[in-house]
View 1: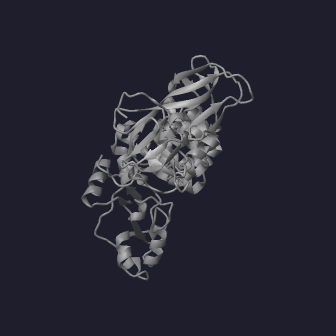
View 2: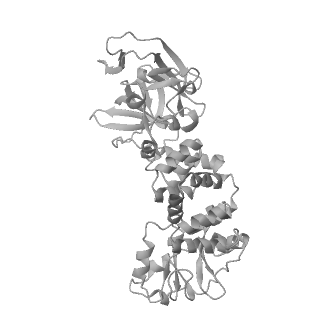
View 3: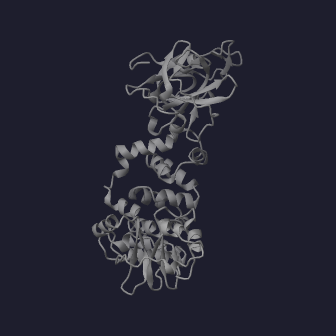
Length: 454
C-alpha cells in the first residue's frame, strides 16, 4: 500500500485471507498488534495475528506485509510458524480496544469505540493508527460477531438505538495512551514487568510528574532502585522527594553505593544527612565515603562493592562469585585479590584476575597463584580524563582504586565513566529514543525471519 493511499479500517481486514506471493493462502487475519505510546502519540502497528490452517495463531510482522488490499493481505512469503504469544507491551486492537469507552478531548463527552484505522507511513512498511470511529451515547454495549466469511459485523446490544457515529483523529480522544489508561499504577506496572530498568526508566521519564510518582510508589524497593539509577538527575530527585523518608532510605540502600552517592549529592546537605541517618550504618558508611571524593575522580566514580577474594580462595570460589546474577557484567569481569578484611576498604591489595583467566585454569587453583600484579591501580584522586585513558589503554571495563596505604577502596566501571562523559541530555537523543523504542516494543525482529532483501 503506497504512502498517501486510503486508510484501512481494522474491521475490514479482520477475517480476510492472507496470501504468499505465489497466491497460496497462509491463513486469516484475526487481530492487529499495536504498541501504545505515551503523550497521545498514535500507536505503532507491530503486526497481524494470523490463524493458519492448523488453527494455530502466529505473528506476522508488518515488515512482512507487502500489500493490504480489498479482501486480502499479501506477505513476502517468509512466515514464522511459532505460536503467537502477546507480550506485556503489546495491545490487541480487536480484543482490547474496540468496544472501549473513551472521551472526546474537546468536549469531555464519553463515546464507544466501534472501529480503528491505520495508515502506512512514508517509510516503507511502517504503519500506525490514525483514526478512531466512535458512537455517541451509552446505547447498549457493542458486541462483535463473525460472519460466514469471517468479516466482522457490529450490532447494537440490548435493542437500543445506536447514537450518532463519527470519525476522529487518534489525538482527539483520550483514554488510550499509556498514562491515560484509567488503570491503577499496579496495572500499568504489570504491562511493563518484562522491561529492562533502562527502558522502564525511559517510559517513566516521559510520563507526567503525577503519573511518574504513582508508578514509582507502586514499584518495590529493588526495582525502583534499578530504575532510579537509569533516570536523569532531576527525575531522580523528584521521585525520591515524593517518597516517605523511611522508604527513600530503603531505596537508597538498594541502589549501588556510587549511584546512591550521586543522587544524594544533588540534595541539600541537611536532606543528605537526614537520609543517611535513616540508612543502615554499613550502607551509609559506604555512601559517606564516596561523597567525600570529588565527583569526576576515580574515588567519586567507583563502586565500593567489587568482587574481593583472599589469595587462598580457589578458582571455583571465584567463579561462584562471578555467577551472581545481581552483578553487572563490568563488575563480574574480574576479581580483586586482597588480604583481609574482605570488604572495602580491604587489607593490602595484591592484584586482579580476569574472568577469562579463571576459565583457563583448574577449579582447585588458588587465585593468589594467578594474580596479575603488573597493572598499577588508580589512586582515588585520578581525574575522569585519566581514568578514561587508563581503561582505553589496557582494554579494561573496570579498574581497581587503591589508596596510599595499599587498601582497595573500590572499582571504577566503564558504564559509570560513560555516564559522566556523555552530555546531560543524552537520554533525549534520537539514538537513545530509537533504542528504547526497540526494547519497549520488543519489535519481534526475531520473528521476522531471514531478510528477504526487500
